[in-house]
Length: 126
Length: 398
Image (cartoon, rainbow over all chains, first blue to last red; front, side, top):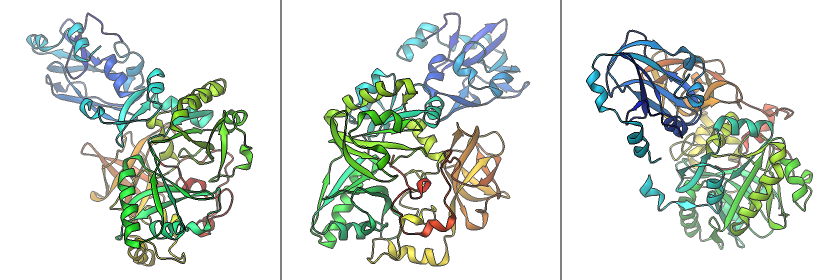
């Protein structure tokens, strides 16, 4: 199972890739594997604001519903329409084409609350 | 969950499931595979080729003795006197108020009846049977064979072809809802043409110690024809497409078989009284006030068990089962709704996370396998025919 070292991770199984002050957010390979076939994603709209550790959306697999929690605070600047029409991208490429939203971060200090790849990996027992 | 896993029952195939990469979950007190590769892939394999299921968690109860028939006529709703040796039927055990203790299949053997019940209800059912039997004072014996019996099911259009070379009986001679004693690769057991997927298939009851051998041989025998192991996740979506009820979701102690549209397994006119009959008579006479209907979600949204159903903003019912249908590519479900909102084509709403999504009542089963003739509605109330009875309404148990 893959845990890219350049990403930050939340305890709720989201990952963050920083591109300047924009955070690209998705769910981890471990999370998609636990969920199984993902068939539906509910995303916020561009312009919405999200807060760290607060719910911003939902992913549903065949069997379960799972809330998405934002790993950072800020304004949604882009949503991935591809995963809305093809949710299975989250299963196929959780760290690539399966990204979910991009957020312009409002508080860089918050990133310190997130986990490194190694810490996340040990948290999920891998 | 970690704590609970210590006390979970394990089927004889649990190590096999681990070897096959299954994700294991708690179900009905058992540690069971929910999926091996993907629920959608496993589902499609059963519709297009074949799937192998470990159902060893199901409860098996044997009832025998001079008054076994008389007792089962009282304890269950279908007419047991109509069963020939080698025949099976779907039936219910009811509480006196008409609520469902369990749904089950009774297999009539030469000297006993085999009751196959839901895993999560097996202990409750045993107690209920014993209490009922004590009250009636019948001369019978009730034996729990659940732990000793492994149940392996092979389902799908290729099931017969895969199984055929490995059994010592003629599978074509076994009609739907019939069974025979036979050997699978030399292992003696019962071979039944029953299932819970909407496909043709067979269920094999073999001794616990022979389960692994039987499973491995069948997996090997079927791999070139596309046989895959299938977990409980796909089992649920398969049975939902075929509109087969799941105890704990669609039916339970607070629902009765008539509301659930399963009155064909309740013989109110059989010669003997049965437990729950008095409560069902007025429901039959006046017609049920609510009905279990199938629906499609018209907007994008997945209805799940327990979600409210509304009509013009008023709550009128509840979803009992719901999932994306891998075969139809639509989101489908079952719900109890008032009889006046149950007609096909009725538009209702399901409330998903505080938002209303349009649903439409549709004809069920959602899926009927190709080549399987639909029965005329008039056949529903007829006495159980000897061969090929109403498949979509019969079922094997989860």
